[in-house]
Image (tube, rainbow, N blue to C red; front, side, top):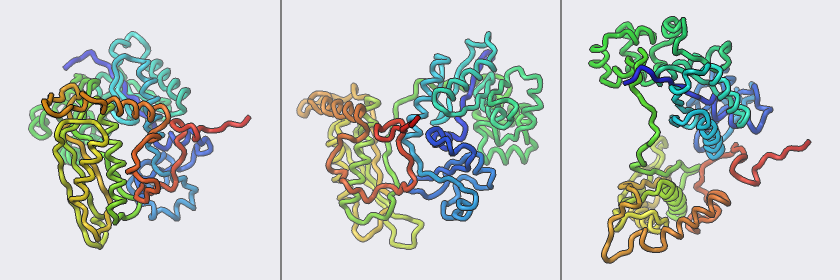
Length: 425
C-alpha cells in the first residue's frame, strides 16, 4: 500500500458507436445502436440513443417503430474494427507513460506518479487531443491517487461538460462535496448486491462509504471491500497489472445465425473455431494438452432439447492445428445426435502451458522437434501479412450457412485493403 501514487483512467466515450462515426462523419449527433452476435439485442449505444429511453439489452424487434421515427442507425457488431481501433489507442497511450494497464477494450490505467511535477490536467488534455487527432475517437480522463478514485474522477469528467473530458480529483478543494454527490453504486468493485447492502445500512454516497468503520466493511464486504475503502481514502492498494498470466483456457465459440441440423455444417463451424483457438495459442507461445467440444440447442425454443460435451486428452501437448482438428472431429462425431436444431457449438483448449515446457518423449517427436511448428509459423506469417484466414483449411467450407447473422455490418476499414475508405477531392 502506498500514499504517493497517481493514476489516470483513460476511457473511450461510447467506444463502439464512436468507431462507426470515425469513418462515417454523417453519423455525428445521430442515435446509434450496436447489435449483439446474430443481430439480436442492443449491446452498445450512443448518448443520443440513451436519451430516447432505449437501454442496453433491449431486443431489436421491440424498437422497430422507434428506429423509423427517430432515424436510429443500427449496426452489426464489427469486432475486427473495434479491436484494431483499440490497439491504436493503446499504442498512443504507451507514448505518454512507461507504466500502463489495458483494463478493457476501451479503458486503460496510466501511472502518472513520475509526472507530478507537471500540470496533470494540461498533460491529460494533451493525451486526449493526441488520441482524438490520431484516431478520431473521443476519450475522457480521470486522475486520482488510486485507481478507484481515478475511476470516479473519470465518471465526473464524462458527466460535466464544463470539464471538457478531463478531471483531476487528487487535491481538488471540493473533493468531499464531489464524493458526496456520487452514489456508492458507481464505485469500482461495488456490485448491485453490495450497493443494496450499503444503502440499507445508511451508506448512500461515496463520501459516506469512505468514512465507514473498517471492521464493519471487512466483515460485510471482505478484504476486497476494505481495499476499496482504503483506496477511497487515498491509499493505493490496487497496482497496475502489466504482466498478465497466460490464459489457462482458450474458448472459441459463437451462436449460429440460423439453426444447424447437419453434422457437416457443425463440423465446418468446429473447424473454424478450432483454427482460431490454435492461432491464439501460438500467439502466446503456448501449447495445449486437452481439447473439449460442446454442442447445444436453443433452450428458449419450444422444441426438442439436447446438449453435450466431451474432452479429449492429447498424446502430447501441441499447437499444431491439424492435430487439434483431428481430435475435434473425433469428439464431434461422438456427441452429435441427428434430429436436433443446434444453436451453438464451441471449442475449449485447456491444460495450457508454455511451449518450452513440452516434456520430451522417447518414441514420438514433440511439436517442437519436427517441422510442425515451422509450418504453423509460416502459415501465421502469411495470414498476418495478407489478412486473417487468407490461408486456411478446406474443412471450414466455402458457403458456411452456419455463420452469424450480421446483416448490418460495416466494412473493416483499418484491416482489409478492399475496405479502405476512398476520399474524393
